[in-house]
Length: 456
Image (cartoon, rainbow, N blue to C red; front, side, top):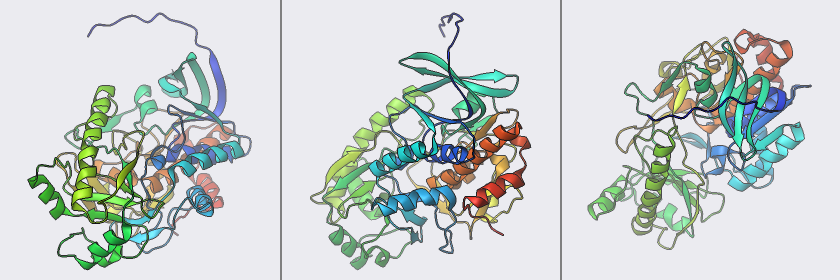
């Protein structure tokens, strides 16, 4: 590959903070808030896009707030966030679901606004439209990051950095051991969400409930869908088969769409591009372009083959693909699928999760769900990368196997992990210790004070 030499230069230091959060998605918002709530902690949040919220703003429901027993297992700051949205009519209740355990619908625009309000309330300095281009290292310790923007190249120094990029960008640049995808190096495929309005939801629900022989639904009895309540339709395999026979290019085996905040609004989760590495801009670009064409066919398929969609129209398209999996760290502990199925308990738990192993197959167009009998602990050690100091992970880049990540990656657990990472970073900064050396009992006590749910 042809190269050029970049001349050495002095880089101005934009800021020096106690805790720097890189990435303003579900985990990042919670991390910044939790760190800032620790008295005397100077916190900065940087984000490459123009809004806060990440995947909470692309039409997806919040998954994982309830456990298999119907109890709230995601509490603390994430639950406070949802409750504030609900008070404004911008979130639904947590509806128990036999397939996804629980669903909570949220308004994307309301989510963006509330995230800003919370950052202002907590005194978090937010910097948008900046891309983390490199890390500042002192030996094996992360001391800050280099950012790029229209302003040029600048440095931000921090006592502790939290990697909420989803792709493990900071850990990767710091040289932490990383994994990608399954044993063959294939990751779960991304999806470009879009919403349709003008759906006759009453017709849709009644048709499915009245005619299970025509409209096959995965796992859940068809009658579940009759009430005007939160739900995700997963199934209609027969309809997909008919559409393919008629020449439609449908990339998935199942039809997947879910309620929005309006009665006639449904968000569609059906585009899929296998083999796309979202850390490569060429592949990411190709993936979004393919999804746009897929969504055109999917919208026409819904109008022709799914009752109630006859007069529907595309209302909104997500501003970016929802990425399920890219890089993840090799941490002090790697959460496994067996831990999930065994309802594992850990002495260093920082919260619990109950969402199933929800694997969108890296090859082909199908999905597999495997359920935890109740809930499992998330260990603090899975947030700590091997060999690198000054860094804590939060979100879908934590240390987990390919299958375990398919559970812990969704937004409920990600928000829980973000809160723990933020609190840990603030405690480390105050104590002058490395994240791996933090007294976990102190962290757990601080999280309990914020209402985080632990199993006794």
